[in-house]
Amino acid sequence: MLDFQGKRVTIMGLGFFGGTIGLARYLVSCGARVTITDLKSEAELQDSVEALSGLPVHFVLGRHDMRDFTDADAVFASPAVREDSPYLVRARASGVLLETEMNLFMRLCRGTIIGVTGSNGKTTTTSLIGAIMRAASPRAWVGG
Image (cartoon, one colour):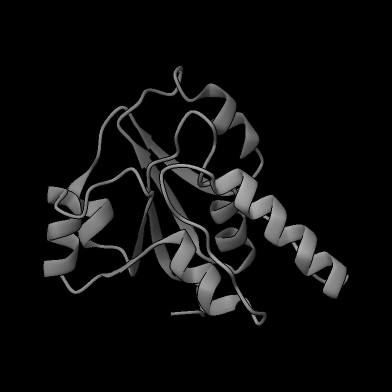
């Protein structure tokens, strides 16, 4: 799904560092009706919630409501959420599209993507690849 206009989209996991803030902003800009749900309280997530102030986002904090998962058109789970979460299992059984921010990015990005994974050396390797790519093309970006 790339057309989110009017769709009910649940984002599972806001996080302390606002890991899904960019996703929420993007989905709102596409016309989605966004619900963000997190087991942490509003007080714990204050900075992340404030970063989305002014946007038409519905928050369910300190708990999850199964209906936010089973009644959605799509659910985006943060990387910290396990695939066997009962909420994701029920959403999947209800025919709801389960997505990740990374999968959405991969489908939307028109350029070549180089991914770096592993336990050690990712920053060094990414910096080196970024320098090589920028030398070859001024349209190269490093992100993470």
